Length: 250
Image (tube, rainbow, N blue to C red):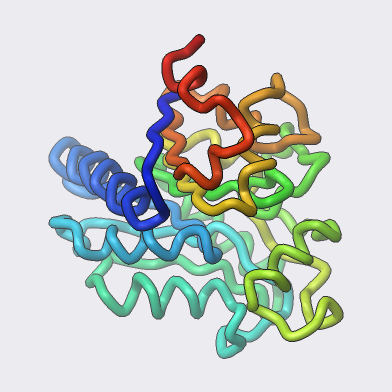
């Protein structure tokens, strides 16, 4: 695990974008193309905004969507398909963007995106950490052993309240109860994982992630098992721990 501490979310996003672009470009140079997984949410605004400005030949990059609410239309303000299209897809000429479509026949949609995902390995995965330490929508206790690429999950109350607090929905009753999520096991197959976790609301999640051994009750602890895990925090998200100790590996 490598931890990078930034002053604020903007600096964090810029630094993470530089690393992501470098890893994507290295994959392109080695293989002629690259594969990227994108997470969404308010914590990823600065990173994605900086990433689309990086010198990357996006026409050689395939992009995979991490998760989406069940039965939420792409026109809804909270749709993560809408998020990726408007914040990423509209700015780059990606080779392809494979969205998680949760309308219609969900099982068929999952099978379709799984087939594309498993054609070859993911080079870089941008994986956020939620306020309840979830990764994707794998809320605690997360299933670490599911072999599927994507599954339908039930969202816990803390997760749903996070979505409400970020302003995506008007009331808690409007927040969907289920989502399609990439599994923990599938996320861990990525060659490089970059987690961008700014803001004070993530301080407890960072504390729980760093201070706990592997446990499904803190799903993000699994990321520490990856041999190329890069955690980006700012002073706000790192405020609940002695972050220098972890950076130095003490």
